Image (tube, rainbow, N blue to C red; front, side, top):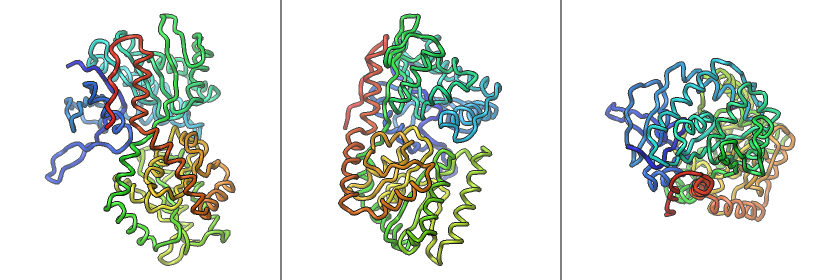
Length: 474
């Protein structure tokens, strides 16, 4: 059946799970994107197209928790060329300021084009006349133009969840023009920050030659494309409600007790990724203990590293490096029952994350580059007593909004040490003043507001079709 709203993303909003009876089923993925888009889909007779992970073929469209889902299969060659290759071996490091060196392989590019074409064709086949299609993220940057060619009647939006690089970096791409033209198939191209939208417009003017004015690109066929910032957020009310719940409050107390009831708990929660700055952060913390400015009797650093892309060599190397660093720090500086760093290489459900946020006195979020970083916002949402301190990299998108955090340059180890110490020693009045202001920002600009503002602007700039109904706020 045709749909009025089609969401196109690399992944479906569900994960494959094995039930207790051995049968296979689906579980809603954690993460803000599902929370944001679910009400919009329900209000608009929507469908979500995405890859469920793995190489399983012949999967039929299905319904999960009232959402219509259409799985896209991938071969092992697709996973290696499109996903691990061009998406995560070329684009990811290039868009994150070359924290790692990007690789440029023509075979990877061919795979990227092939998979994007398949996604575009599937979206074209499912969209009703004059429907709205919302395409997500760096894996699918060619889909808007491919879709525009197949279905000129559609209203098309694109949103990039990661940073968009400055011209000096983007221009390294052998396929820079094709990617820019791919994105120009959309009516609205959304970014996390104003600077990213400006980078895009400037590159279009320089590399494609279209006329531009502020946030608008004028195409020869008469269409106008808008590039705008839409800083993504979280379900702030949901996180606060979880943090206030009895099981989470009890679990937070358990965590502190298990850590030996230290005076202060530092916390880092990140995907195990080279962009997150985990190694430098732990080094800075260890030096504070070596210098005698912190003591393992007083403080502990809990670092959760969520497993990520474990089949990719760089990620395996990073895990080994961090494992060795934690072992060395604890061997040199820890005491019996008092490790300097409590390191967990695992993923946890949202309730456990909320308990960790509640237990932590100082949240440390120090990526070298991040589109937004929702962990920082989740921590703030969980601090309903207006206490706790946030140490935040100025290179995370969240730093634009959470100005009251202790902002740091993650490349500056001494600067990071100073900020960690300041946050540790901050007076309650100071932490309350800062946290109140950050909580106001996160509460007012939640994920529902993000989705509604994108959809509203897409309705305004699209040249075709019916306006999308906003999801009703509950």
